[in-house]
Length: 126
Image (tube, rainbow, N blue to C red):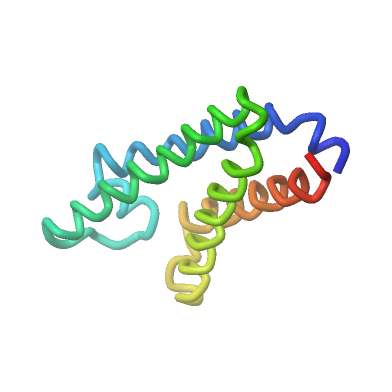
């Protein structure tokens, strides 16, 4: 835990930068969805939702970067980012192996690592 607490700024910067890569979904929703889930995106409403999803995830990444530089905000930022990542993980895993390939699997694994690090910091008494 001490190692996580001592390095939380770098953990948050890296996690935030990785999370911000989802701006791709806001800019190119069809390509991002196909790459992430291996299925085509169908319909203008679905495209709108995926663009919003990408923008919201990017904002979570930006919050992580902000929290890296503003220590008093870290607990709240880590709780929000961790909660968001847990929801995504749960939703992907709730579909069994359907999305357990390609980038979705990579995202779930990397998000699990991030959540574990965030929880370690929060449990370490920040």
